[in-house]
Amino acid sequence: MFSILAILTFISFVFASAPVSTDSPEGTSYVATFPETIDSGISGSVRFDAANNGSVIVSVNFTGLPDREHGPFAYSIQEYELPADGNCSSTGDVWNPFNGDLDATSSTEQHLFAIGDLSGKHGNITGNSIYTEYYDNYLSVSRGSDLQFVGRQSVVLHGANGILRCQNVRVCERPMNNLEHGNDANSNRVATFAMVLSAISMFLFY
Image (cartoon, rainbow, N blue to C red; front, side, top):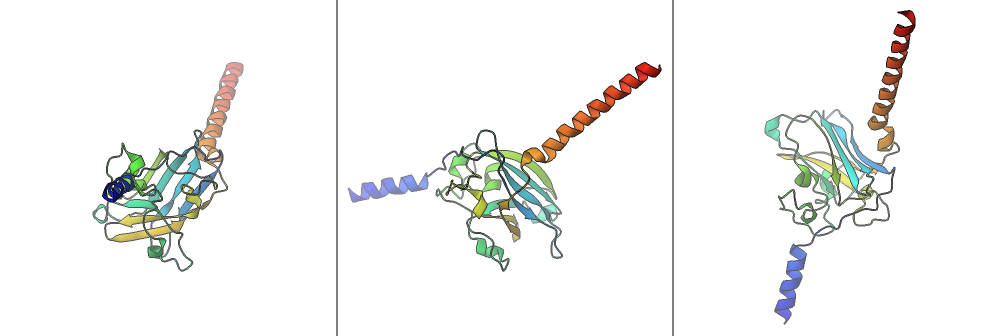
């Protein structure tokens, strides 16, 4: 009897999966910002914005990555924050509160991954720069979501030979709607207004 229970417990551990998160409050954003430094020309950010459905939109933006032979470049949310001494190795392993499969490879079964394995779920970086956005249904920007809340973690960028950069995730005061999406909308309105004025002027002075 003991052996059967042990086997069942082991199976449930091996096949643990992350639950879908839908509690991210609208207008909430967190970001790990990577400024260019004297020691590294890599700069960018990994941003986490609340989506309309309560999940999270992840925006990944990096430039200045090394040549392709030093990649592919993986990036992940780690289990601990970066300490004051800046030692990236102290951030621990990939964030994995639900005992996901660290060797998972199928992008169609993202619930089986460690929830911090962003590039495992959504693809490695293969060039010198990247800008991409995607939904991640297993993260949260809600402080009440203890096991899926990204705001107490760090993000690490990995190359073929080890860690390249690391930064803590911090609250972002500028929600997505006030950034490029809002600017695009304002630009479109201004452009449309200018076209209308131009058409009126041509009609009046023709």
